[in-house]
Image 1 (cartoon, one colour):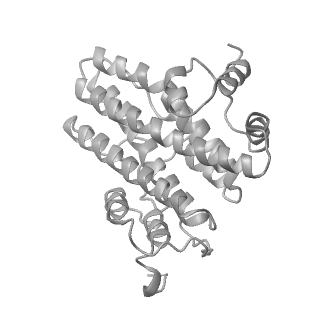
Image 2 (cartoon, rainbow, N blue to C red):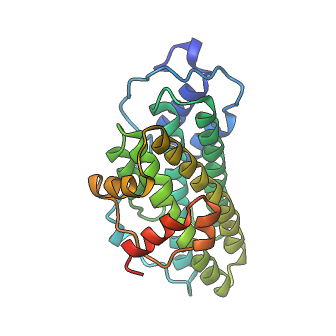
Length: 270
């Protein structure tokens, strides 16, 4: 192990070890094994090791447009969709663990909040992979894209940008898209998958809320306007353009206020 034994049980060190783990199932097991009680050294700045995030050779990473058709009228088409969702959730595991180890000096609750997120994302991945197996497929059988982690790379040195552009942008987009995907799966007769997405949607509202809380707290501490700062971050880091329709109810539950929602709708020309 690259870390000294005396810190291996420390929460943030364990999160780094989980990010580096290449096997998805062992990565999830490592996340679930992290306890809230170990020493929580918020001040240690870890040197970034090579190999982040740890991953196997499959799935093959391709541009988003080449991931594959997600036809709802075939088992394989639905499996492609479930695989894509599982890949998103595994990226979310890495992202939650990454924010824990990478950014030192935050209050203890910050790390405990993201540990909760990491554990729930790992559970989501395991649910989706389990369902994929019932369809005769496994994680890695289809190509996947790396857009979520690319944003993590862009924001590796800027916590405020990470909070703005991962939970408040990429994950919040999931709040918008998931209800329609649930409906399509249910219409196709895959009620088990739709039920899994209902669990994920419920939990993701909480994850986006955590991102919103810490983003707004940091903005307040730095006397920054939350809306103009968000717009600046999207330009600086070339975030994907926002697009509707928006799940306004879900976004409100996740901590977006009415001014923010109006700004999002204006940016999407709705």
